[in-house]
Image (cartoon, rainbow over all chains, first blue to last red; front, side, top):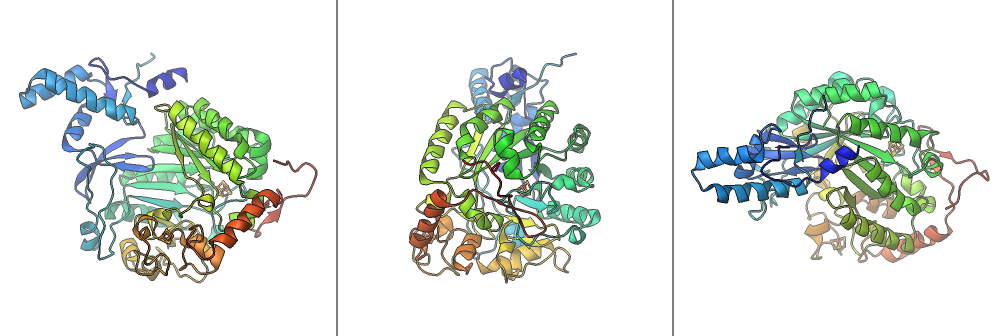
Length: 106
Length: 404
Ligand code: SF4
Ligand code: SF4
């Protein structure tokens, strides 16, 4: 339980392996033709960039990997992209829509 | 599906925030997009007997409930017309034997599912099965922070201990948890402890809900109405906790409108962004709408589609928008902010659902009703009338009835 608690408030770094928590679902809404995040009592409408980043958050990749992928795709300076990605993920984490992949206790 | 429904539900994002909450743009034609979330009241049966229960005093009998197949058809139809989230509620939704099957079906058709439960009927096996069926979130109601008050309010022995156990299982299964606490005069002194309880249970969210006075709660108003001092204290406790627990526990709190200047924007406005389905299949603008006697609500068992009922039925259109409003609302600058308040409360307190909600200080009935509430809060008896299918049972008037 203490472990869960400490997972709640994460601080995003390049080593973090972020993933959406179980209560937040990223889904394409066919009716309204846009991506949404479904959470208890709320529906959020992430913008295109947020969606792209969130789709890369699978709990396996770390933030550094995600940044590298975006740098390659957009051919932009790593520093710029890195800062933006970390800031966006931290914002999501603060709002409770991002958590850390849990280490498997084998 | 009627094309106007999709057209009428554009969403906008605040460019300043990549995570803006989805809202619908205002439509002058007063046509409204299908809600994002729907409340499915699977049954009115419930082992608890809370004196503030929001179900109608006239409860739907088990024999009138929609069948498993009917509910499945409803869920499929909801997903098809663009509903994204389904809240399974009641009564006690797990009193239905087919609850796992219904959650599974919701998952299969792509709905985000939430279980709103009193928890006392759940076993670990049942909860695991629900999690496996794709349940996304669990909301457990608590009546206090310890058994003496909690079990008395719920009218159910050993309920509180059971709830704590189920809350623990919920987190062990890695399901997100919301603790819902309905507050009133006889448990408000426990609020700080309830907040701590939610933290200890590792809940993600806490809803501090004040009793809404219609239906059963209106019958029990004298026993439930908080004092003004209690409300002031409550706001202080909540505001302090919201700061202290930022990032640990989300606390939702709505100030009770009896003691506010303006009424709440009930349901986000009648027929604007929400509907619920009653156990027997009626489509209602609010879970308390059946307390308004004399209104006809259409059923999923009729020949009409759910989308048609939402868009065209008389009940939904009667209080939609602002055209129906009497004075003082009609010429009031707040009319599109609170939409005249709550129709159920207007009906309960004035006898006409089309009146201004008397919670508003501008309502001609406000002073008289407010004064009554205030008197009840200090002079009302603590004895409850319990909610049940017999039309209510008065709490035994023994010395063991705990005071505040
Ligand atoms: S408010 Fe109480 S009695 Fe009513 S459905 Fe919920 S748990 Fe049951
Ligand atoms: S008069 Fe009507 S619209 Fe104006 S604040 Fe009161 S309830 Fe709201």
